[in-house]
Length: 128
Image (cartoon, rainbow, N blue to C red; front, side, top):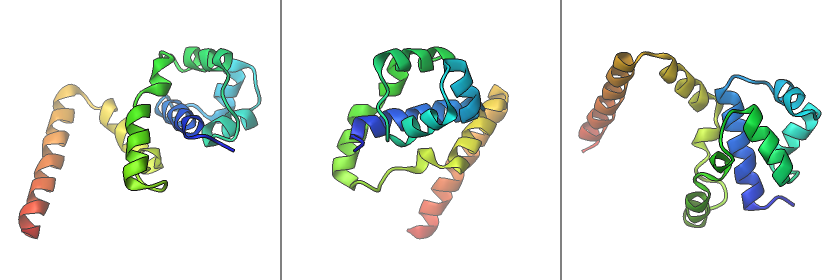
């Protein structure tokens, strides 16, 4: 049975892999395992050993601490929201948006962010 930590590490693994545009197969080849094992890590079905976490961090060009980033907050949020809340960052749509955002230059990114904020502000004004 997956623990909250296993689930968090799996989500972070999936997020980083997708942000880099890698398939499970490509990542598995880099660390010398089968893609099914990556699937099991990502869904929290299998625990990631310290040695494997090191290999994954190297393959994904990120520090090991990346996998633990936000863990304390996620545990607190889970207590507040419940087991099914706060999954928006694991949605493909969200990851696609983030990828597209970071492919823009700095000035278009700022303009897009300003636009998004203004749309949010307009939505609040209409609701009031």
